[in-house]
Image (cartoon, rainbow, N blue to C red; front, side, top):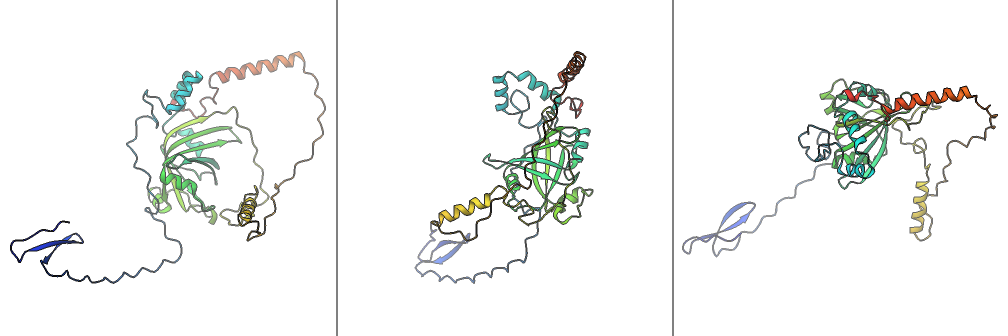
Length: 347
């Protein structure tokens, strides 16, 4: 800062220190600075820090909710500009518009909420601020994906490998996509897209006291992810396989850190990494012995005997099968994407 001169030989000039203007007698040597005593650093806390509402990065501020689902195009249709361009190129604009009009909601209706409440798993898609994507699997007891309101749901983050890729993405980019699939009973799927944020267990329970509390140590929520719903729509049923749930021979090891019980080095990634480190050391052996290559947990089943050839069906049987195929085609014509399974056409 430039000096400020006073009048006459006894004038003063200013010196800027710490945001204040200090008077100094002209011609006098500057006052010696007194070194300050360095602050004593606080003792490091013992154990992991307590999680609070300010423990996680805050995603960008959300704009006011639009009257229609997110990603509204200039022409007033849901979806991205890219998907609209592909629809024009593929000639599917009319079919897509019918799907937008009849199947896409901005909330969870009654049937969707019932569907969510009984699911034991879903797939979670997130991306960081650069658009780099990640897709992961979440599972828990029925109801672990908890419906908070028609336009909001939440799921717990259980103890895992400590990487927290999904939480890291959500802290940078709140957009998230959930895919729920029922392979056993209804063979139908549900897409839920929305904006997610990380909340502590105490924060969410203060707002929703009826939140379920899981007694198993490995299933106690470290934090929760709240998702504000922007789009909800059915997933096509025609290609979903029918799977049957079998009894497990051993109980699930929720929250375990035992590498073998978590699957071990099934894909040989740890072995490959040790080989790479050995090469980087110039051919010298790595610090740890190489892990044996993992084997699948089950051996291939022996070939089954060829069933006897079936008799050629009669003409009457052919006609009956043709009649059933025609009925299936007529039902599919009214809703080839699974029909109005969730009742979204009626809101």
